[in-house]
Picture 1 (tube, rainbow, N blue to C red):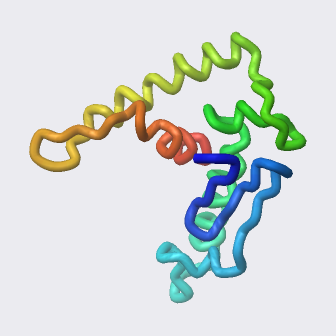
Picture 2: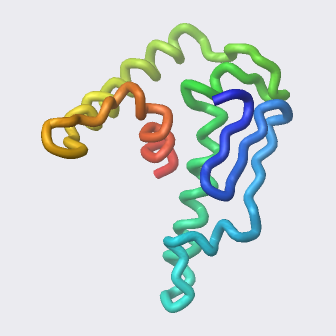
Length: 119
């Protein structure tokens, strides 16, 4: 995925650890101007939380606070993450996409972990 990762209308630039949210982000499919503000703000907050977790996941661990390529996790941190993330890998690997084709939970971990972590 290189040094930058984009998620919809959001971007994390690893080189300077800068998060960028476009002004159009709240206009995403989940935004509904007809409903109460609270769910709309909640959706926006979840999106921001999701993006922030990029800096603390299995990819973000390889970049320090200044965006330098440096694994800053301790061995205990990495071991604990791997152990806990395996629960998500196992869960998603049980989901059927179509017919008898299952999701590859390990392959989708970067996406699924961030979704769970932002909750």
